[in-house]
Image 1 (spheres, rainbow, N blue to C red):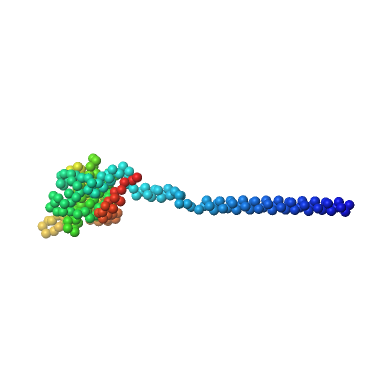
Image 2 (tube, rainbow, N blue to C red):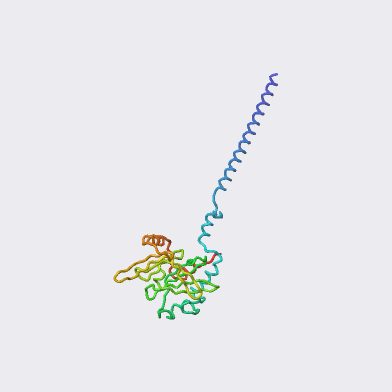
Length: 257
Protein backbone atom coordinates (compact mmCIF):
# COMPACT_ATOMS: atom_id res chain seq x y z
CA UNK A 1 0.00 0.00 0.00
CA UNK A 2 2.75 2.34 0.95
CA UNK A 3 4.59 1.55 -2.32
CA UNK A 4 1.44 2.40 -4.33
CA UNK A 5 1.08 5.77 -2.64
CA UNK A 6 4.70 6.61 -3.49
CA UNK A 7 4.13 5.82 -7.20
CA UNK A 8 1.07 8.13 -7.31
CA UNK A 9 3.05 10.98 -5.75
CA UNK A 10 5.88 10.47 -8.24
CA UNK A 11 3.51 10.65 -11.24
CA UNK A 12 1.93 13.82 -9.81
CA UNK A 13 5.29 15.54 -9.41
CA UNK A 14 6.40 14.67 -12.96
CA UNK A 15 3.13 16.02 -14.43
CA UNK A 16 3.50 19.32 -12.56
CA UNK A 17 7.07 19.78 -13.80
CA UNK A 18 6.12 19.21 -17.48
CA UNK A 19 3.23 21.70 -17.28
CA UNK A 20 5.48 24.37 -15.77
CA UNK A 21 8.06 23.94 -18.54
CA UNK A 22 5.39 24.18 -21.25
CA UNK A 23 3.97 27.34 -19.70
CA UNK A 24 7.41 28.91 -19.49
CA UNK A 25 8.09 28.12 -23.17
CA UNK A 26 4.77 29.64 -24.24
CA UNK A 27 5.49 32.81 -22.26
CA UNK A 28 8.92 33.06 -23.88
CA UNK A 29 7.48 32.77 -27.41
CA UNK A 30 4.84 35.39 -26.65
CA UNK A 31 7.43 37.86 -25.37
CA UNK A 32 9.64 37.31 -28.41
CA UNK A 33 6.67 37.84 -30.73
CA UNK A 34 5.71 41.04 -28.94
CA UNK A 35 9.28 42.31 -29.14
CA UNK A 36 9.52 41.58 -32.86
CA UNK A 37 6.25 43.38 -33.49
CA UNK A 38 7.45 46.41 -31.54
CA UNK A 39 10.67 46.58 -33.54
CA UNK A 40 8.74 46.49 -36.80
CA UNK A 41 6.54 49.47 -35.81
CA UNK A 42 9.57 51.48 -34.79
CA UNK A 43 11.33 50.82 -38.12
CA UNK A 44 8.40 51.80 -40.32
CA UNK A 45 7.71 55.00 -38.39
CA UNK A 46 11.12 56.52 -39.28
CA UNK A 47 10.92 58.87 -42.36
CA UNK A 48 13.28 58.01 -45.21
CA UNK A 49 14.95 60.21 -47.78
CA UNK A 50 12.90 58.59 -50.53
CA UNK A 51 9.66 60.01 -49.15
CA UNK A 52 7.80 62.04 -51.80
CA UNK A 53 6.99 65.73 -51.11
CA UNK A 54 3.50 66.69 -50.01
CA UNK A 55 0.93 67.88 -52.55
CA UNK A 56 1.08 71.36 -50.98
CA UNK A 57 4.81 71.56 -51.72
CA UNK A 58 4.25 70.60 -55.35
CA UNK A 59 1.51 73.20 -55.65
CA UNK A 60 3.77 75.94 -54.31
CA UNK A 61 6.47 75.05 -56.83
CA UNK A 62 3.96 75.11 -59.67
CA UNK A 63 2.76 78.59 -58.75
CA UNK A 64 6.20 80.09 -59.37
CA UNK A 65 6.44 78.78 -62.93
CA UNK A 66 5.11 80.43 -66.05
CA UNK A 67 2.59 78.56 -68.24
CA UNK A 68 4.29 75.96 -70.42
CA UNK A 69 2.89 77.51 -73.61
CA UNK A 70 5.20 80.51 -72.97
CA UNK A 71 8.33 78.37 -73.18
CA UNK A 72 9.00 79.32 -76.81
CA UNK A 73 8.46 82.99 -75.95
CA UNK A 74 10.98 82.86 -73.10
CA UNK A 75 13.48 81.06 -75.31
CA UNK A 76 13.06 83.77 -77.98
CA UNK A 77 13.72 86.52 -75.44
CA UNK A 78 16.72 84.68 -74.04
CA UNK A 79 18.24 84.31 -77.51
CA UNK A 80 17.87 88.06 -78.11
CA UNK A 81 19.35 89.04 -74.73
CA UNK A 82 22.34 86.72 -75.25
CA UNK A 83 22.89 88.11 -78.78
CA UNK A 84 22.07 84.77 -80.37
CA UNK A 85 19.11 86.15 -82.34
CA UNK A 86 17.89 89.46 -83.75
CA UNK A 87 14.76 91.43 -82.89
CA UNK A 88 12.83 94.02 -84.87
CA UNK A 89 13.40 97.52 -83.50
CA UNK A 90 10.37 99.74 -84.10
CA UNK A 91 12.55 102.84 -83.75
CA UNK A 92 15.39 101.61 -85.98
CA UNK A 93 12.81 100.14 -88.36
CA UNK A 94 14.89 97.02 -88.95
CA UNK A 95 16.05 93.75 -87.45
CA UNK A 96 19.29 93.81 -85.50
CA UNK A 97 21.08 92.19 -82.59
CA UNK A 98 20.84 93.67 -79.12
CA UNK A 99 24.53 94.61 -79.20
CA UNK A 100 24.08 96.48 -82.50
CA UNK A 101 21.01 98.25 -81.14
CA UNK A 102 22.96 99.42 -78.09
CA UNK A 103 26.01 100.68 -79.98
CA UNK A 104 24.92 101.93 -83.44
CA UNK A 105 23.92 105.44 -82.19
CA UNK A 106 20.89 105.50 -84.49
CA UNK A 107 18.55 106.60 -81.65
CA UNK A 108 19.37 110.03 -80.17
CA UNK A 109 22.99 109.55 -81.21
CA UNK A 110 23.63 107.70 -77.97
CA UNK A 111 25.33 104.48 -76.91
CA UNK A 112 23.16 102.53 -74.49
CA UNK A 113 24.05 100.10 -71.74
CA UNK A 114 21.58 97.62 -70.25
CA UNK A 115 21.79 97.74 -66.45
CA UNK A 116 18.63 95.95 -65.27
CA UNK A 117 15.70 93.99 -66.65
CA UNK A 118 12.36 92.66 -65.51
CA UNK A 119 9.85 90.12 -66.85
CA UNK A 120 6.07 90.62 -66.65
CA UNK A 121 2.85 90.55 -68.63
CA UNK A 122 2.35 94.23 -69.49
CA UNK A 123 -0.76 94.12 -71.67
CA UNK A 124 -2.75 91.33 -70.00
CA UNK A 125 -2.55 88.83 -72.87
CA UNK A 126 -0.95 86.09 -70.68
CA UNK A 127 2.30 86.42 -72.66
CA UNK A 128 5.24 88.01 -70.81
CA UNK A 129 7.25 91.01 -71.95
CA UNK A 130 10.84 91.86 -71.05
CA UNK A 131 11.70 95.43 -70.07
CA UNK A 132 15.32 96.60 -70.29
CA UNK A 133 16.59 99.62 -68.38
CA UNK A 134 19.00 101.59 -70.60
CA UNK A 135 21.58 104.04 -69.32
CA UNK A 136 23.48 106.73 -71.22
CA UNK A 137 26.72 107.32 -69.37
CA UNK A 138 25.78 106.39 -65.81
CA UNK A 139 22.24 107.76 -65.92
CA UNK A 140 19.09 105.75 -66.70
CA UNK A 141 17.49 107.46 -69.68
CA UNK A 142 15.33 104.95 -71.57
CA UNK A 143 13.54 101.63 -71.49
CA UNK A 144 13.42 99.09 -74.29
CA UNK A 145 10.31 96.92 -74.08
CA UNK A 146 10.55 93.56 -75.84
CA UNK A 147 7.21 92.14 -76.98
CA UNK A 148 6.63 88.76 -78.65
CA UNK A 149 4.17 88.81 -81.53
CA UNK A 150 3.56 86.65 -84.62
CA UNK A 151 6.57 84.47 -83.87
CA UNK A 152 9.02 87.37 -83.56
CA UNK A 153 10.41 89.72 -80.92
CA UNK A 154 9.72 93.45 -81.32
CA UNK A 155 11.43 96.27 -79.44
CA UNK A 156 9.85 99.58 -78.38
CA UNK A 157 11.93 102.46 -77.02
CA UNK A 158 10.37 104.60 -74.27
CA UNK A 159 11.88 107.57 -72.45
CA UNK A 160 12.58 107.01 -68.76
CA UNK A 161 9.89 109.42 -67.54
CA UNK A 162 7.36 107.64 -69.74
CA UNK A 163 7.52 104.35 -67.81
CA UNK A 164 8.12 105.01 -64.12
CA UNK A 165 6.88 103.07 -61.11
CA UNK A 166 6.18 99.89 -63.09
CA UNK A 167 3.81 97.51 -61.29
CA UNK A 168 3.37 93.76 -61.67
CA UNK A 169 -0.02 94.25 -63.35
CA UNK A 170 1.65 96.28 -66.13
CA UNK A 171 0.45 99.70 -64.98
CA UNK A 172 2.94 102.56 -64.67
CA UNK A 173 3.26 106.31 -64.21
CA UNK A 174 4.28 108.77 -66.91
CA UNK A 175 5.24 112.41 -66.43
CA UNK A 176 5.22 115.49 -68.66
CA UNK A 177 5.80 117.88 -65.78
CA UNK A 178 4.97 118.50 -62.13
CA UNK A 179 1.27 119.09 -62.82
CA UNK A 180 0.99 116.98 -65.98
CA UNK A 181 1.26 113.27 -65.34
CA UNK A 182 -0.81 110.13 -65.31
CA UNK A 183 -1.06 106.35 -65.17
CA UNK A 184 -1.55 103.84 -67.95
CA UNK A 185 -0.87 100.47 -69.59
CA UNK A 186 0.78 99.66 -72.90
CA UNK A 187 -0.87 98.24 -76.00
CA UNK A 188 1.39 96.83 -78.70
CA UNK A 189 1.15 96.87 -82.48
CA UNK A 190 3.65 95.68 -85.06
CA UNK A 191 4.75 99.23 -85.87
CA UNK A 192 4.05 101.21 -82.68
CA UNK A 193 2.74 101.13 -79.14
CA UNK A 194 -0.10 103.00 -77.49
CA UNK A 195 -0.65 104.03 -73.88
CA UNK A 196 -4.07 103.18 -72.52
CA UNK A 197 -4.47 106.09 -70.08
CA UNK A 198 -6.22 105.10 -66.87
CA UNK A 199 -6.07 108.45 -65.11
CA UNK A 200 -4.22 111.75 -65.40
CA UNK A 201 -3.92 115.33 -64.20
CA UNK A 202 -3.54 118.25 -66.60
CA UNK A 203 -2.62 121.88 -66.05
CA UNK A 204 -3.86 124.87 -68.03
CA UNK A 205 -2.80 128.49 -67.72
CA UNK A 206 -5.31 131.34 -67.79
CA UNK A 207 -3.76 134.78 -67.51
CA UNK A 208 -1.67 134.60 -64.33
CA UNK A 209 -3.31 131.53 -62.82
CA UNK A 210 -2.86 127.81 -63.39
CA UNK A 211 -5.79 125.43 -63.23
CA UNK A 212 -5.27 121.71 -62.67
CA UNK A 213 -7.92 119.26 -63.86
CA UNK A 214 -8.22 115.60 -62.90
CA UNK A 215 -9.49 112.66 -64.96
CA UNK A 216 -10.08 108.95 -64.41
CA UNK A 217 -11.06 106.81 -67.42
CA UNK A 218 -11.26 110.06 -69.39
CA UNK A 219 -13.95 111.49 -67.11
CA UNK A 220 -13.41 114.57 -64.93
CA UNK A 221 -13.18 113.87 -61.19
CA UNK A 222 -12.44 115.80 -58.03
CA UNK A 223 -8.96 116.18 -56.61
CA UNK A 224 -9.97 113.94 -53.69
CA UNK A 225 -11.09 111.16 -56.04
CA UNK A 226 -7.87 111.44 -58.02
CA UNK A 227 -5.80 111.26 -54.83
CA UNK A 228 -7.63 108.05 -53.89
CA UNK A 229 -6.86 106.70 -57.36
CA UNK A 230 -3.16 107.53 -56.87
CA UNK A 231 -3.13 105.88 -53.44
CA UNK A 232 -4.60 102.69 -54.89
CA UNK A 233 -2.06 102.71 -57.71
CA UNK A 234 0.89 103.31 -55.39
CA UNK A 235 -0.27 100.40 -53.21
CA UNK A 236 0.19 97.90 -56.04
CA UNK A 237 3.19 95.57 -56.04
CA UNK A 238 6.33 96.83 -57.78
CA UNK A 239 8.11 94.67 -60.33
CA UNK A 240 11.45 93.13 -59.37
CA UNK A 241 14.41 94.48 -61.34
CA UNK A 242 17.34 92.12 -61.91
CA UNK A 243 20.92 93.04 -62.67
CA UNK A 244 21.60 92.40 -66.35
CA UNK A 245 23.86 89.34 -66.35
CA UNK A 246 23.97 86.01 -68.15
CA UNK A 247 23.23 84.17 -64.91
CA UNK A 248 20.10 86.21 -64.21
CA UNK A 249 18.96 85.93 -67.82
CA UNK A 250 19.31 82.15 -67.68
CA UNK A 251 17.44 82.03 -64.35
CA UNK A 252 14.56 84.41 -65.01
CA UNK A 253 13.91 83.22 -68.56
CA UNK A 254 14.22 79.50 -67.81
CA UNK A 255 11.55 77.29 -69.33
CA UNK A 256 9.47 74.66 -67.58
CA UNK A 257 10.64 71.04 -67.89
